[in-house]
Length: 295
Image 1 (tube, rainbow, N blue to C red):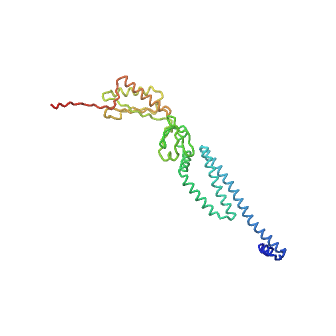
Image 2: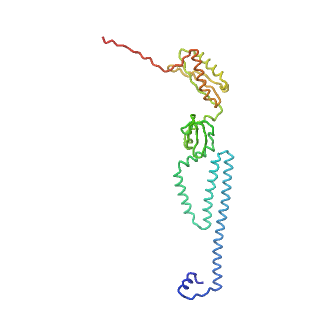
């Protein structure tokens, strides 16, 4: 059988062409059938790989979503991680399907790797904040409404987002702290436990009656219903300082009452000390002036 290109050239040059025989037609049909059969199987295999891979990706996405929802994670993080896993799997499924068609996928993988590296370097800070946000949501060192000190800021947690945590300062300012900063430093959560200890120090003069001072302090503590009986408060002399005798007063209160008890107890004890003449020393200097007679 003459090739098609040869027949076309002969026709253009005016050469008489011989009609193909039945055998030649059968051979051509056989060749076309073989080509279609081979490529048909490859196309079907590629479609099958894509369909099965897509179903597996969707199943994994649903599984990840259910697991994260069971742990009570934030909906934003749950949706983002689930969808990210789906697209990553689908990308590899598409590459596998192209491989079934005979496409060399090594170049695709190299391009994807280079693109991933470039994106990773460009978004290094953002990815770090995202990873930190996921860890914060998983391990939950704090929750919305907690009062904490983290990332160089102090305030009440207003929202925990993917890349940052929103705090509301005591003077009602919004503080946006990157999640990576929070995880890279110590986290002090003042709301983790239901009760807290109030640490107060009161100084009296060396001439004041220690027993009377302790009695007044205990009276103030017992009169305040916000101060817990268990654990029991402590009142102890902790230091003989340069100009004062210092007492440590440590009552326990509910976390929500901390600052009110702190300020109220300080004010009440100061007033009681003033009423009975107990002094609270403060730094002072005695200046002596000497007059020299040069005569």
